[in-house]
Image (cartoon, rainbow over all chains, first blue to last red; front, side):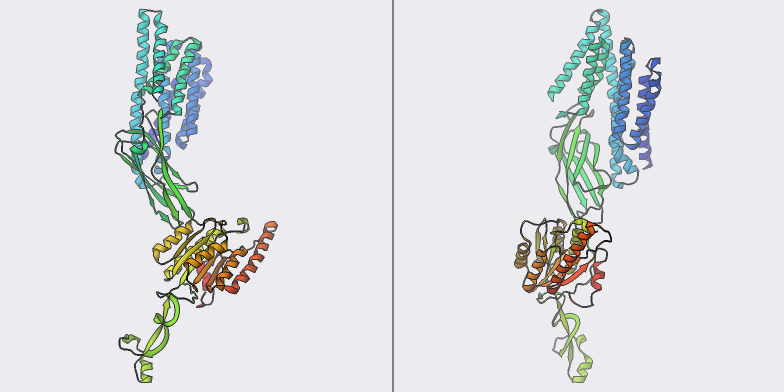
Length: 197
Length: 421
């Protein structure tokens, strides 16, 4: 049981750490006049994340993710207003992908929280140990998969941007159009996927 | 197959990025759509029909609870398809009053092809009744949780919680009609009982240990002791759940108490070798014909498990008498368990008694509380009315008052020893 407990505590700790890290990554690009949000934002995220993970309450989890989303929106708007999106895009993309990974991480932990925590609390059947073990293994496997998926997301987007830069260097007038072309293709692809359903 | 709320939210965010890019004239903003699009590209259909691809099983222990005990449930889910399910959310649908004591009835798990998973949980001692467990609600989604298939799989099982029984001790019934099979009612005939009955001359074949040597020496011939035979009788237990008393007037659940008393009496009467039947008059009207044995007792308890307070659509006298006439031989014993809260039941008792049945009536004691106010006045009126009915009943039947605070065994022991009911 100790082995499961330490594994579970580690996963919970990692998810909290990841959420706070994401919040710090988002506010790191804030201008100085947003100093109060830069300080308060990660603290609020940390508190909500700890409450969500310790109590297994999805409402706190949603609050934590919503706070991060607001922080990210502020970052995006502030960059847009000073026309610094293209310069900060790698960081913006990274924080966005980190945010998406955080959503999956927190969802994984919260969906298994009741089952694993109750069992570790000693109020459950010994025979459910197999299920708990499987749950922990599932979380680890999915984290690995998500890690790969989101890393690919980041690399792919950077790749798309690089391609648009290359196209732009050949014909500067196409620079903006290239991005729109990529986007229109993606939007159409999304529509095709939806139609498939 | 539908897109989940999560997928719709992500799509909304993606289009919001595109909208912002167009609105602010900042094309690079739309690069944030690419990660979302990539997530949609890798999500796949989780499966078409879960009913054919997943099997579920459920084991209840015990499947028939005697009350005051927790029920353990083992759920098994097997993936028969060739596809691996990354996100399977399982939720067992259980009847509303049931409460989970330990474990969980809903969980998220991945189920590989051919894999079986087992989950255990406990329901804390439910009240008497029949509860449905299942079917199981299953939602399967892809790894990103964008596409979801939800269905209900598996069967519904019944959890029967029987009434609580208590030891009531030996019931000395007075019966004018005895059955041929052995029991515990003195038959006033020579038989294989334990009470001395008379002396008789020795007949070859008699057991030597029955020879009364003193009497033989006095009379100069071999004399043997004869014992009184003990036989069984037929008993119909009639439970009156018509419940005209307002529950607020009582400081206990009268129907539960009566059902428990009925179960205890049936159990004891069957243990004493009698043929026992049951008739329940209430919102659910049931009856069980006369019979012996453990299986028969279970049948009676199953019928008691579904007893509910209320009035049946047909009148009580017709309902009861049709059961008595069709199932119980004349001069048998009718045990009535009733709060005597209506004149109907008194009429039924008197009618049955005049037909030659030996009637024993168990009725719960209703104690008035020391409080003042309209509730106490109502309680006093009820007590007076009941007293009148009890006096009427006592003229034709043996009336026994029972209290939920005192064990029935102690109350029966308080009566004169050996005096039949």
